[in-house]
Image (cartoon, rainbow, N blue to C red; front, side):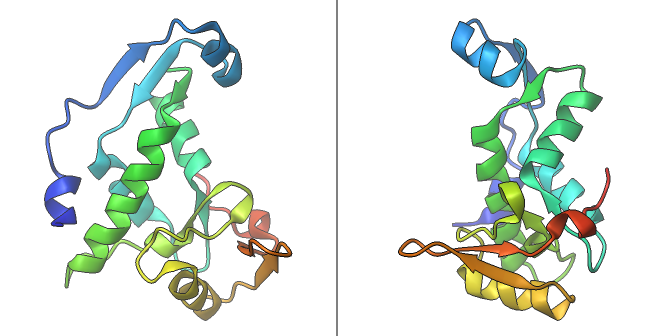
Length: 152
């Protein structure tokens, strides 16, 4: 797959969609759902400096806040951060430090290039400590990630 083409594909975004499902409105705290285009995630991920991290949720909150929406679609957020990661991996220039973008609670993302092993290596090289949680289904997290959060 050409992830750089996917990153810049015209997807009809950005856009705001009105959600009418009461359960969704209650879960996300409103009815105005924002959809950011893939390249917007890439642009935000490029801002995170060496030694700092950000979560996908923080990026979603940033997009909602700056686009007069109640929340940003969580499904496309996960997909588009992965596309940004793989697009960067396929390029030889203009790297996106995708390994600095974490899942909720500081969890590493197994869908990034090289899986959690590579993300762990990159984060440890920047001074972060990675911890493993779980007894059977191991999950990896940046220890005290809150202390290294980048503010948008």
